[in-house]
Image (cartoon, rainbow, N blue to C red; front, side, top):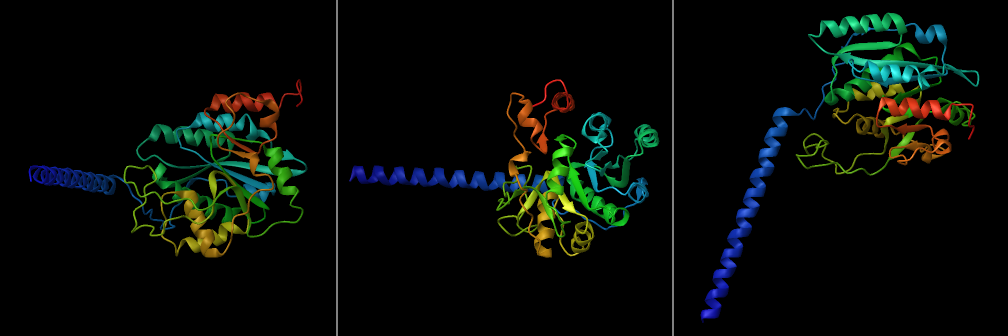
Amino acid sequence: MFCKSGLLVGLLILVNILMLYFTATTLETRKLQKIAKKTWNYHVAYPQNYRFILDQPKKCEDQKPFLVIIVPVAPQNIEARNAIRTTWGSEKLLQDKLVLVLFLLGSQSGNETLQEQLQNESQVHQDLLQSNFVDSYRNLTIKTLVMMEWLNKNCPQASYGAKVDADVLLNVRNLLHMLVSLKSLQHNYITGLVLSGNIVLRDPSSKFYIPHDVYPKSRYPPYPLGMCYIFSMDLPEKIVHIARHIRPIFIEDAYVGMCLRRLGIAPKKPPNIEQFVVKPPQRFNRCYYSGRIAILTSSQTQLISYWMDFHSDNRPC
């Protein structure tokens, strides 16, 4: 009898402990969700009424590039822009194909000194596109759609466009070789490091948390990773048009995949997917880097030193 009573008491204690645990967990989750809702915007409005403060509307018409590369970058990050200008962004004409590199910025309201610096930088380099949306991580989808709008309006005569993050070391020669090897001009084409079946994160503490009411599906459609993707120039118009009917989320590359799914366009894997690298070897290998197209780097210093090394004529790979 005593044993049975002791067992019953033990079970009651265990049940109480479990109830307290689940109650605490539920309360903590609700707390995180409340904090998230106050500080994060999961749905990014895109009213399509942004204007350009700095613009280069005649660049494509005057230069007639084969490939237009847009680099989204923060207004204050002049070091990243200069690193690209002195490395892969300096490669303007390769294999008789003209390459145009432009930087896309949002605005930082109230910072008049920074804006004056950007005005001067634009006069010197003539490669800045600045729109009046607030430049922030949560507005990267707006930045992407502004990019697509600009390309559709100003560069329909180009064959291809590319979006490349500022911390990516790009091998323009290898990229052009990949595009030329396609032989015929592609349509409804987008490629890069294509991710398929990526799970939508529901943990409120995650940087990439998306609530059910914003995006109800458990997985994203296939999309090319935002570090670097290349597309045929018929796509910007289609993406801008379909974006009016799809609720944007702040994860910009996943949102591009949502637009592609609605358009019935599947992103293509590149001829050699190993040429797009997120986690390169820790030790520098000249031959390895010279054979890639896009490599994520850890700093501007690394980007410059690696580019200079594998472009050196002293030690051909």
